[in-house]
Image 1: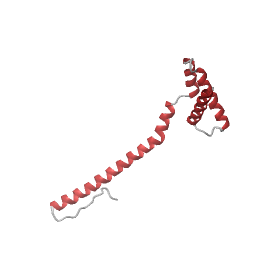
Image 2: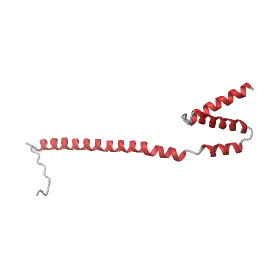
Image 3: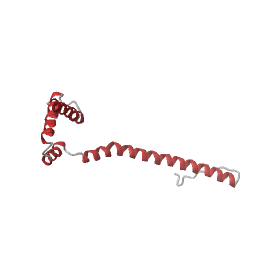
Image 4: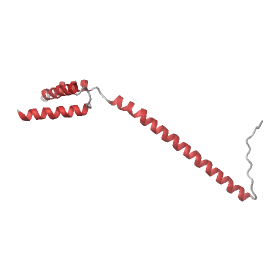
Length: 119
């Protein structure tokens, strides 16, 4: 049974020993640096994968309640906003919720704007 892990460096002189020792230490430092770099890269990828969606989810607000507060504070744009929201609901039903919320709002806004211009 070995008690110590002793590595013997064979060399001819003291300066030869120092150069071999420095090379070994440099290799060790480079390998440890790469190991730390990869650990940091993995940590960044994990944070991007799991941390960012959680932060985005916590920052999002529920659009109907936010829109309800907006409707209660603005009386002049009340009818046009309600019209756009009704159009969004109709587009959602027609497309069976296959479009993104942003596209539905954009299309509803365009339809509402075009209908106001035709009057």
